[in-house]
Image 1 (cartoon, helix red, strand yellow):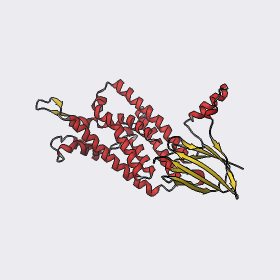
Image 2 (cartoon, rainbow, N blue to C red):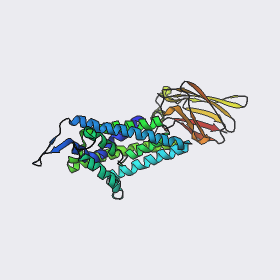
Image 3 (tube, helix red, strand yellow):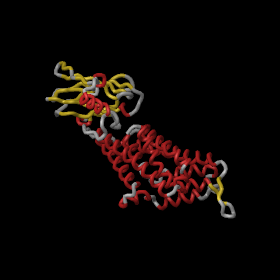
Image 4 (cartoon, rainbow, N blue to C red):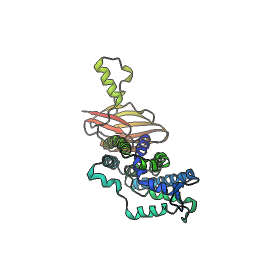
Length: 352
């Protein structure tokens, strides 16, 4: 899943979070007078910033910890594949629960009682908490510990990144994406008319299910599957052009065959963070050793990790220059070339 997809998923997931945490937000946003009336607190935006700042710091630390834990277990692309597929499955379950699936409704309300009580107590101590003016920030930190729908799926992706930096970035983006709704609409979502609120929840559920599909597709790529749920738009366009006889020579897929020297097949691929792999498809012969030179062009990101899962290729490309990879393809067929997050794809075709 790309960072943009993570942002969009977290943004729509924040509808669910806003409903869960709006009561806490309102607790520090309004104050009751002696006659039972409520009025908006002064400096409310500062409190909102503290609340979301607490969430941002906490989520970033959680992401770094998860990435660090994942680095001890990320031994193969298979591990990342199953982690990514698990994240997609959780997104599907929460998306369906937001649609009102009876058997899954409890997922929307699964909060440890002790943690909920601790958070609620802290929310009710505005101006009296031992944390003083930083009480909203403490409240924000506590809410990151409460299970909140698809956010858990993004935490699994942070775990699967196997990197302290990437894990931290994933959860940092998550906190940024959830902030707008929590700052401006936490109370509004709760007070919406029933029909409008349900419609908003369903739109969010649709978006989450869409990104669940793309996440599952990334998992398939990491598992080495050549099957893709999400269609390649360039290939679709080329197919339509062929059907209707349009001239589309500029958009044809770039391919390359192996040069054989001294009984070794030599191939070269450029991994570019802007356009993906060039050429997209390379050809080799079965049971003949391959020397594959991968030139890296980019500034970090998941394409820095180069994988051909079927043949056990899993290497980190150098910041500048090229990496020589040696392996022997022992089976024929079309095999997926991908990055560390399954976002970019290429194809290795092995012929007999």
